[in-house]
Image (cartoon, rainbow, N blue to C red; front, side, top):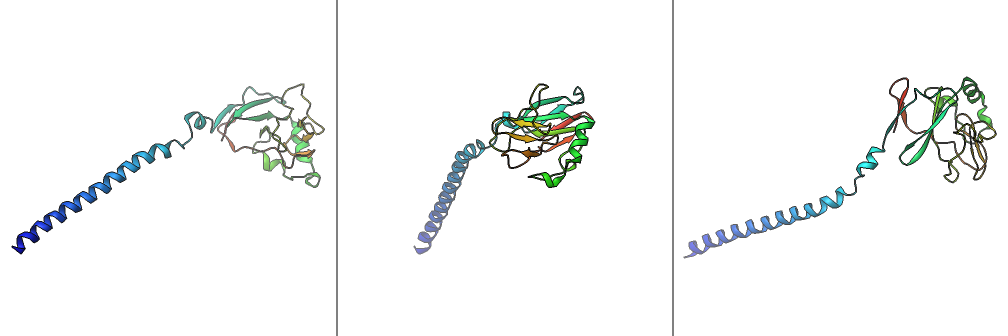
Length: 181
């Protein structure tokens, strides 16, 4: 009689173990199916991913001209610098600067300067991209909100801005095409 009851107990224990494992497995699958959409919705939207990088064709940009493109919702200034602007940007003494950076550190191709067009003081958009704009005391960009003056390399020279205009990450895909981001 004891062998019958012990084999019956073994069957019941096996069923109970199966039920417990199945219950935990279903609970795990249920938790994962609830958690996945919550985690997945934290990924950037498709329109945001599309803005992560942008390509700019510079072939129509003549010396002295500038364009503004949008990257990650911010204006990006691209200017085809003249030989005089390049010369002025290189001749500046770093001792005169609040945030010293050489022109070579800021531009991989001296003909083109690429900058995030947001003043580093309070986030205004400086003037200097259009032909008739005030370019400030140093010929680059001027933020009329609080009077920050930037030179031909986007370096802060006068005013309350603490740092130079930001240079976004970019690379030349060819002689006339850059990829920002």
